[in-house]
Image (cartoon, one colour):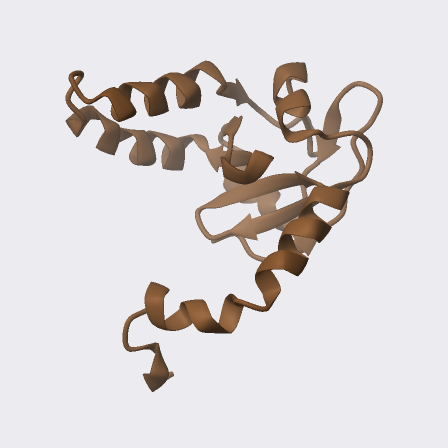
Length: 145
């Protein structure tokens, strides 16, 4: 499970240091994809396979399914971290997410998300006020907690 917020910098070669807490889970390889809200998703290879297995059930006649799969797989890149824990983010993915130097890396349960620092600040400020309201919708019965 990936947790927390980290603020690594992107270097001149398009590499990012993965947070030390995330490296073990990503050591067997990872897949970087376009995520929603203009961030990048980083999946352990095994979790990406598990996630995409569900897509096999989508009939080829389902247009939204085809479109989703095209965007997901066309923008995906299989990567691995070097010995220092850096991962290279392909240029097209950096451009998609608007990544420059300052980044925010968050744990998002089964995946990691990489955001441009300003984009994350804007997004989290917009979502913070609604966070408490979502619990009942996202976790039915959450009033019990």
